[in-house]
Image (cartoon, rainbow, N blue to C red):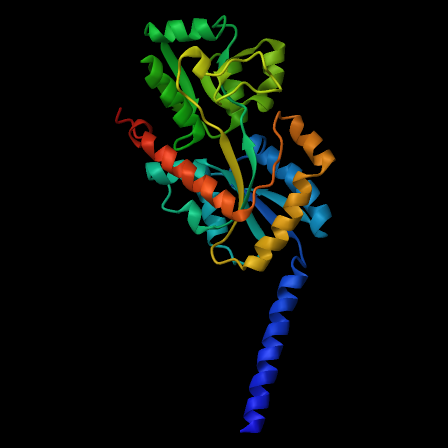
Length: 316
C-alpha cells in the first residue's frame, strides 16, 4: 500500500513538473500569426508590425500567413481547427462578428480563446473619387437626389455595414459590387469603376494627399487628432460611428498559461516606442487591453452589430 501511495505521489509530482515545464517553455518554436485576408490591407499591415516586435519579445520567429476567402471565414476556420498549443494565432477584426450575424460563418468568435484587442482603429472613413465629386457635401447632395452610386464592399464586413448605413441614412440609390481586397478597391476607384468604398484613413492617405480621393467623413464619435480637418459623419447629421476592433485569438481550449505568456509579450510591444512609431504611420496607436476586457469589448460590439442585421441582409 505504501508503495502504491509513493508511486501516486511521484506520478502527481511528475505531472505538475511537466505542466510547469510546458508553460515555462512556451514558446519553444516559431509562431504563425494567421491573417484571414489578402496581404496589403490594414489587418495585414498591423499584423506584420506586431509580428516584427513580438518575435523580439518572445525569442522565436513570428511569421504572418495570409489565408483569404469568404470575408475571412476560411482563415478563421483554419485557426479554429488548429491544435491549441499556442503556435497558431488569429489576427483579425470585428468582421468575424458581422459574418456570424449575416450567416456567412457558423463560427462563434467568442468561442476562440481571445487574447487581446490591442488596436481600436478610429480612422475609418468612406472614400469617393475626387475627379467625380468636389467634396463630401457634393457627394451627399447628389446621392440624396437619386444619382446612382456604385459601392465596393466585402459581404459581411465593416465595409458592407458602413456603406449600407450611409445609403440608408441619405435614402440613396446605391448598387454594390463585391471585393475583398483593398488594392482592388483602390484600383477600381482610380479606374472610374466605383464611386464609394470603406477604408482606414492611413491605408489611402497618399491618395488624399495626391488629390485622387476625397474623404466623406470619419466614422467615429470624434475627429481624429492625426487629420483634425476631416469632420465626423455625426457632424454632417448622419448618425454613423464605427470603430474597428482588431484582436488576437487562439484556438478554443488553449491553455491560460500560453495566453498569459503571449499577452505579456504583446503588452511590451504596445508600450514599445518604435512599434508605436510604426503604427503612427497608419494614424493609429496600439494599446494593450487585457483578456477579460477584450472579451467584453467584443461582446458589446456584437450586441451593437446585431441591431443592424436587417440592413446587412438587405431587408431594410
